Image (tube, rainbow, N blue to C red):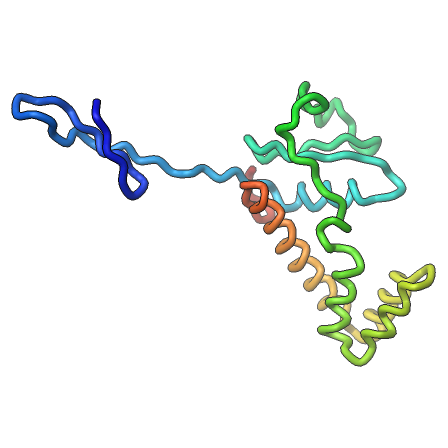
Length: 176
């Protein structure tokens, strides 16, 4: 059956007594696989934790996040049989690769604590910097603002990472 494509559809033609005539349309749409934001965020944290070695991948076909860690019971969350041999699974990056470490703290300091931004940077030149930063945020009554900022920035970065890999980020509570 002859076809003609235009604007996201294919016009199908059929041979009739008077020649070729339109017989119908076949529409197609790109299906975007979604990844649960909470699952992906947890996987990034796990991969980034220096105390607990772990690996995580996203399946581009289903959006499922697969995790290998001593913290996860593989019997409850089995890994695909080809996780070690296939290159189709997308490795979940470390938070440093996503600019979710110090960059995030410094961006917040620049926005919410502009007069103390240099002091915040100095805190991280010595041990215990994050604790000092947390204390400062608490003292200034900015804890809620910090947590909202961190969550919004994290989700924006994870959304961009998903988009880069042809995926979409599903918001909290939505199925994969």
